[in-house]
Length: 311
Image (cartoon, helix red, strand yellow):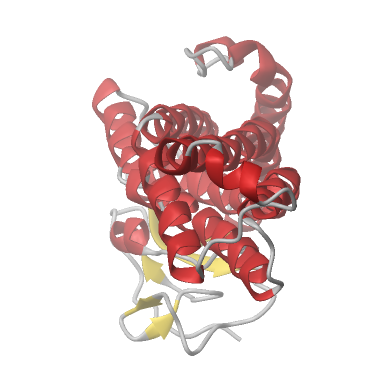
C-alpha cells in the first residue's frame, strides 16, 4: 500500500501531509472490511476522498490565485502609466490640475495595450505555478482513489495523470480573460463618469484587490474540482473491476450545456463506461462527485447498464 509520504514530491508536501493522512485513514478503514470492491462502501469512501482533496486544492490555490490576479491588475496599471508618461510626459498634467481628460477611444487604447503587454511576461510563470498545484492534487487524489478502486499504481499511470492534468493548462490560462473583462468594466465605468486618466488609474488600482478576491474563489473551487477529477477519473478508468461511473450530487442539471456526453448533460449523468470517464467535463463551480455504478463479474465481464441523464 502506498504511504502518505510517497504521495507528494513537490514543495507542497508539508502543507498537504495532514490531508493525506486523513485520506489513508479512510482507505485503511475501507480495506479492513474485505478485499473485494463493495460499491456502496467504496462510494462512501470515494466521496470522502473527493471532498478532502477538493478542500485541500482550494486551500493551496485560493491565496496564490488571489495574489496572482491582484499582481496582474497592478502590473496593468503600471504598464498603462508608463505608456501614458511616454506619450504625454508631464506637460498635459500641468496644464490640467484636475487631471488629464482623454478621449474615450484613447483611454480604451491605453488600457488595452496595458492588458496585453502585462500578460506576456508574468502570465506563463503564474500558469506554471497553478499547473504545479493542479498536478500535485491530481496525483495525490489518484493514489488514494487507486487504493479504493484496486487500481495498480505504476510509473506509466502516474505519468498519465500528469499528462491529463497538463491538458488543463489552456483552461488555467483562461482565468486571465475574465480578469481582463473586470478591468475593462472598471475603465468603461470611469469613462462614462467622465473621470480623468489619473482618476481612472486610481480607481482601477483601488479595485485590484476586489477584482482578485471576486475571481479567486470561483477559480479555486473550479480548479479544485478539475484537479481532483483528473486523479479519480484515471483511477476509475484504469481499475480492473470498475465498469461504469456515475456523477452524483450536482445541485442541478444544465440541459443547455455547455458540457455533454453523447448528447446528455454531464451533471448527474448515470452509467458512463469507465473507459470514457476522462471525457467528462463540467461547468465552473461544479458540485458533483464521481461514484462507481457498475463493476465487472468474476469473469471480468462488464454488466449491461443503460446510459441515462441525471435529474
